[in-house]
Length: 295
Image: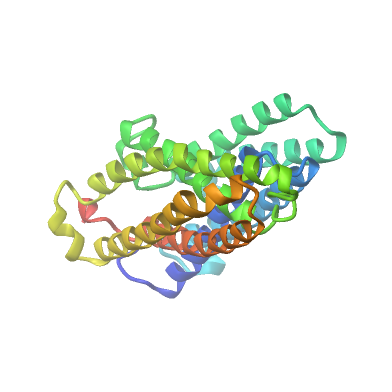
């Protein structure tokens, strides 16, 4: 973990944010259930990107953990993988990621029944989220601790919330509300999923922030971690304002079959997606910065 934004730290944050976005997209494409085989293709691509980014991230994390040059870290990676808690969680997460990628690839090619495909990939994605939580600040409380389990639920909830918006805004854009008959159902499903996932993400996020702050709000302005958290909260508030506008005003018109309202709905969804990318980047920075509770 970092006290400041070093070059190594910035590289870790960039890779971690990319991996988190890829994971969220994989989750969102599966949960949104639009586009038939297209959603499986999106999940397959996203999970492949996650696997590549995780493989690149490992030597950087090894260098940071042991405080050795990057070249030296390459030789020490086997020790980190076999002898450290981080290595154990990385191996579990990577194995789960490979399993999820294979499930999505098979589902995209063989038209695996949705019920079976969904059950298998959700199990693998949940294992990936748990392993991710096991490499975070929450792991300091021990395996299967309240902090680690809360962080696992938070990662899954935030991935649903972020993933469905990004998936609908870009890779599944053609399938999302593709026809007037489907517009009302697709936009309502998106809205309902976001409404269900956000409170869970918010509640678990507040719990994680409370632990990170050491139970004191004074820490919000006393260090980098606190300031990053403030920026994240501001970005989330902005997303909520746009989402509320979309839901309370334009969604009603979309349900009545107004094509102009659907166009505005899509545009605002794109703005939400960009802000969510910013939130994920800030979250990655928080994960690589020492929280006040650990200083």
